[in-house]
Image (cartoon, rainbow, N blue to C red):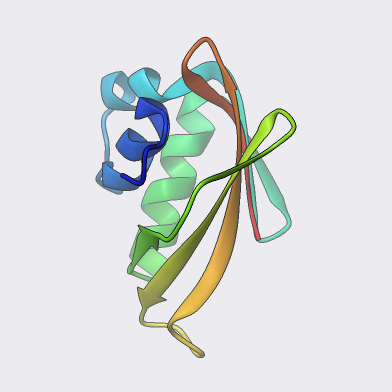
Length: 107
């Protein structure tokens, strides 16, 4: 994936219902995801967010580029799904720690 760190490539390839073991290879135990003005902290909350989001609005996200902005990796992704206005480009802002995602903001 576009010469990105492994954790980002794994993130975009994860199934919506990824197991806790699979999530732990991508996210730190205390990771935080901010999406649609909601914060999801920890692996269990992140798993629940992924499952709920995909059940409510199935989508695919295809990364377009990767840029480093200080300690954050910005990845615009083309998001296509069954929602009004599809497709859209959403920027995913990743903060990594020890090779895994510690924070992700989608917007």
